[in-house]
Image (cartoon, rainbow, N blue to C red; front, side, top):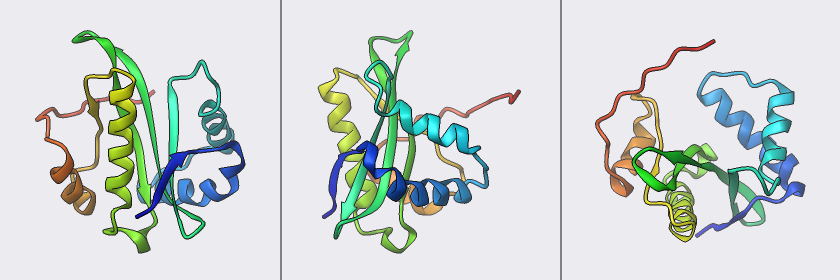
Length: 146
């Protein structure tokens, strides 16, 4: 089983290839300034963004990023699991599940009533896991980019 722990500033160089793999998977290009700004946010106490990493055999094998935000349906902030990634060679070995379960624990400890996330319809490998650890909400996402 992987060790799940909070990311540390000195993890940046080991986290970066995972982040780049995640962005390649979603066919998006994130400017370096945004990557570095996002990383810095994880370590600012006033920020609602958090990062956990999965460590296996001394190497980073995956990560999860999550944040808390207000909701009109709850007085306590809800938890949005924004990014989840495990190295492709290690998928199916419990890393994704362990990262999700760690977010569940963090959210419970923070008093959050819900953890939720989005994925692409065609992300079938991930959806097999998600169907085992959560329920589909039935909502469809709409957005407009600017």
